[in-house]
Amino acid sequence: MCPNCEDFARTVVMLGQLALYADTTGADLDFVESVSASLAVSLPEPPPGTFPPGYDPNAGPDYPGEGW
Image (cartoon, rainbow, N blue to C red):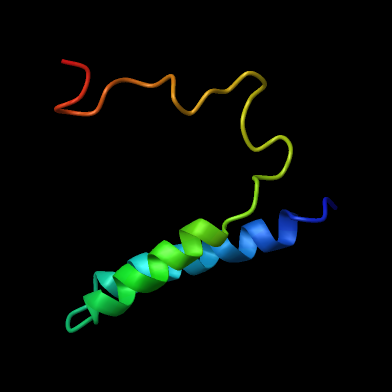
């Protein structure tokens, strides 16, 4: 197993659990905002094979309001 695979998977699971928590009634959205940013920044490089060869995350369509 690659050295970052376990860290990557664990961080993705925590981000998913945080997203589920954010949708619950009475969720502390300030907590969600601060923790989600920290988790996203700590996300290691994805394990090999996660994306197809030559994948460019910046090659997708423009977001609404961009590319005018």
